[in-house]
Amino acid sequence: MFVRTVYMVGDPAKVEDSLEALRTEGRQMLSEQPGYAGMGLFTDRELGKISIGSWWTSEQAMQDSFEALRERRDALLGRFSHSPTIDTWEVAAFEPIDRPGPGCGFRLTRLEFDPMDADLVADSFKGSALQRMKEVPGLIGASLFLNRAHGRGAAGAMYRDRDALTASRGAQAAIRDEAVGKAHSMVRAVEEFEVVLVDMPTPSPS
Image 1 (cartoon, rainbow, N blue to C red):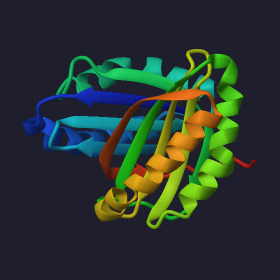
Image 2 (cartoon, rainbow, N blue to C red):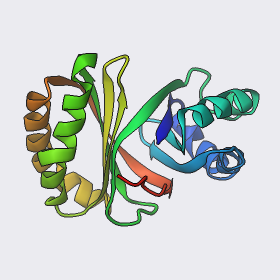
Image 3 (spheres, rainbow, N blue to C red):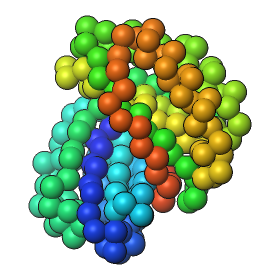
């Protein structure tokens, strides 16, 4: 499975209108494309940040949808930001534990590593790191996205509410420090978002 992410920073006063457009028009636009498998919409209202992830059954479907939706996507995203950051990823791990809903909390850790260590990063996450994450109260899902060619990763952890997200920070920091040490990777950023919408994909058979 593959994911395309869109990251935007804009005027906090425009966040609500943009989220509504993405929840409705954006979701419909994506779901009409062949190979669509799900969507996540996340925000930091105070700072004016919006993050979108769309899931695709194949890399080809992801690429085809990008071209097919170019004009409509630019018009929709341009209501909030004219300079979105768009990335594509391989889904290296996806562990749904419970169905998320509005008000859940989401933590995103951005990673960098030597492209030759991509498998090491994936194995480290899927091994002890994921097992330890499951022991943290309130966790309802975790994922790891990789861009092997560029040596970048995005690790996500979703919690049942904002309080659980906040309470998990210490435990998650300890898990993160151990995991990046084992995987010879480095943390570039840690961000937290409110979950607006998750149209959850079905995990592929392992």
